[in-house]
Image (cartoon, rainbow, N blue to C red; front, side, top):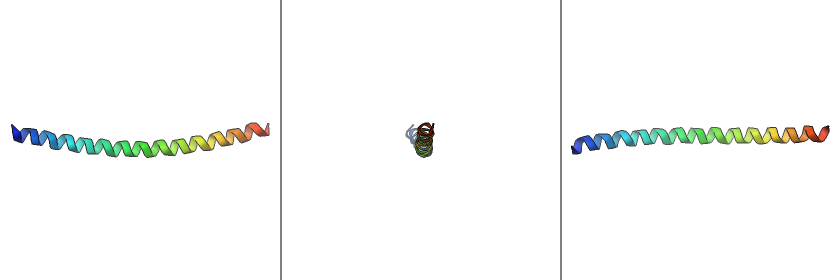
Length: 51
């Protein structure tokens, strides 16, 4: 019983680790997209001012 629980705990810890890594990657992607969005908004603003 204890052995089973330890194995399950180990598996859950590994899954948690994987999810944390995925979350980190997604946060980095989100950051990049936010920066791109910012750049596009600035370009849009410039174009609107020109017209």
